[in-house]
Length: 274
Image (cartoon, rainbow, N blue to C red; front, side, top):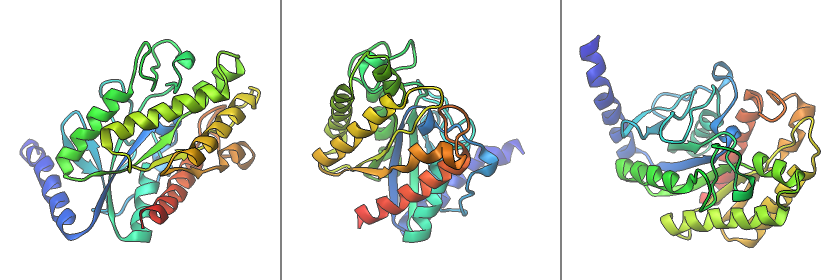
């Protein structure tokens, strides 16, 4: 068994290389906070067909078959606990395009977009703060690009709850969030080129809190998508998840919601890549 396990990473890479030469591949990054990490249920997650999708692991500089729990605890980023949008996205993308994907997660629960929203050691995507995250995300993505030989085809951004709370607490405004998100997009594009698409899943509402903060973040996300080229709101219905019974708790989406986000995001991305 130990002998077989030693050969497994090499076998997986061989399978990946064969499919990569035979079929078109796309590399996507999923970034943001806890709903990007994924707080769903792996047993209810979509199961990808063999050879359809791969996850890049930074810790071992390797590719593994994509399945939940997606991601890994490496550096300041976290794995799904236990289900995510990733398998639903990858399987749906393959279903409608016949093309395979490699996905990378750089997400951290509670992370803010604006420095003033940063809470303790949860981190921020701003350039400065107690725990800035974006440079680490860029470095990990570049390693994935080197490993696969693929360009980055898009960034899927699921973030905003922490900033919504800061807005509700009058620590910042919706306009502050818009400026911070614009800076995040610019910094990613400085690293990967001005043409890399940025796909935004709009922030949902939080039970037990005024929706004012979430509404301000959602409005800012729409405004940024209208102002910046190749920046899109790909999913809007998170504000309806509570009524649909798609919430795991007061802030996190359950696996039904995550699967819907993944599938609908894949359909949107396919249209933009054509």
